[in-house]
Image (cartoon, rainbow, N blue to C red; front, side, top):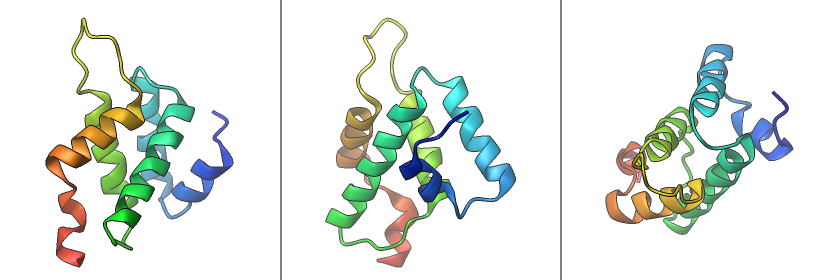
Length: 100
């Protein structure tokens, strides 16, 4: 799978197994690799707006996976980055709460 450059650099800290897990999550979702790349950029921007410098990539990917599976069966799929924004606004992101 060809990954966008922005995604490649974001995933650089992951181990091979973590990277494979991420790619499997993309394959198992209804969203494209570009949707996931856009959503990770949105996530990064949200963390920056919250004055959070920590980027727990594995936790971020898991959070995105949950967002990707939140859509109901008969509901028209929203953009993954929009689903993410809604989830972050409603639930926040606990993976970084200890580092604030």
